[in-house]
Length: 120
Image (tube, rainbow, N blue to C red; front, side, top):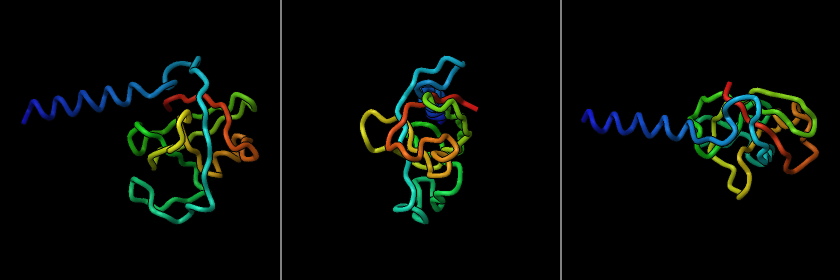
């Protein structure tokens, strides 16, 4: 039992540490997209209802509840989002933002934008 707990703990540390661009101020740019109206009110992978007006995001590996500071490479704006869903489902994208987060970054008019991710 102890060994399983230790393995699970080590695996969780490894997965949270492997998320690209979450350390330091020189995070490499990654691609972000956003989602909203079509999924508004549906359940997220974490079990809560998706609110397109909340500052939330979907990420493949980060634990639910993790706060991430997202900086737009193009606009220079930043926003802190909470991970509450899994995604994005498209290759080459690292994070899916809510409509509110995309608006805050000034990238809502873009389908995909370059961002930097920092653990908050």
